[in-house]
Image (cartoon, rainbow, N blue to C red):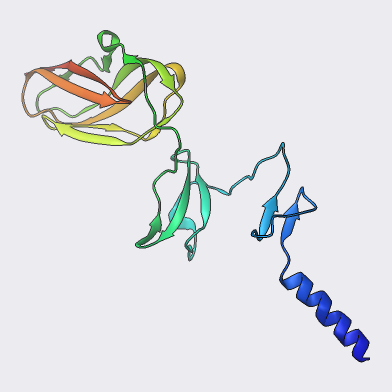
Length: 188
């Protein structure tokens, strides 16, 4: 009977202090889990709202589908990190002359809901952060995202009520480049 108890204790001890390998027969000794396959990847949980995770713990990782990036829960202070991106978004340039407001004009004192579309060239596929600023009563907002590889468009949503009339000049900076003097005509 003592032989069986000793054998069971040895087996339990080996199990408790062993590493788990998926795709490898020899997991690295300093890992708890070693994903050893050479042509597969770890597929993280896809979450649209980090607030939906009950009792997050430091070190948890998710893929945030709304911001299209990986986030990690950190301890000090306790919160979800910003996007973990290894590639910051850059563009070769903006085609400022082709930027357009839609609708093309606004009216002083009347609610304006529209967009500003700015074409770009030479996007690297990297991320850009959200932006928001207010000018002449209009709030310009850019949702965080990724530049296309090559050519694409940045689209700002615009909402608010213009306080004054005239040619309203807007300056935009993103991806290391700027468009200055983009003009929205505000009718009296």
